[in-house]
Amino acid sequence: MRFTIEETVEHPREEVYQAYRDHLVDLVPQLPNVDAIDVLERHEVPGGVQLVNRWRIHGSIPRTVRPFFKTDRLSYLDHASWIDAEHHVEWRFELGVFPDAVKCEGVNYFRDRGEGVAEVAFTGVVEIDLARVRGVPRFFRKLNDKVEAFLIERLRPNLQAVTRAVSAFVDERRRAGE
Image (cartoon, rainbow, N blue to C red; front, side, top):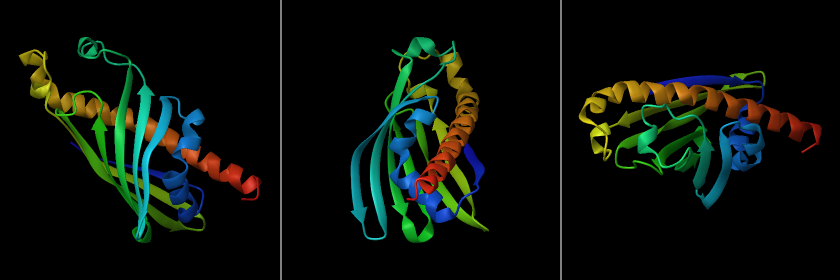
């Protein structure tokens, strides 16, 4: 299932882009479902940055799938290739649970909307194959589309929270004269 979520930030594109690329760890206190972001790898490469971050998150897991999780705390690896000249990031999530059953990847675009306003367009695809999850009853396997839609709906408020945190971060840096 494909998705696009667009958010507007009342700051110049370059500042928004750099805050997302370089300061996600600093935003954790403002992100309600994120316990930590650990930078596992960071490589400056010609034209951009390669990052691998581990996101440790929490949140409510639907009752129907709780038996298949050992914990309410989840993590995923965020593999990101930041392309500075094009102001976009190509990303792929590697989930800590059911990595063979879930595909989640995409590209986020940072667009200049003029007069110090940036738009962030989160685009991607979520594909789930419940048949690849050990122990899932056959009748659940027909719910792939519903689970994908559920995950995408969960993404929306989280991406909005990150965008608000980025805006607050840029505001704070400006007040501090950075």
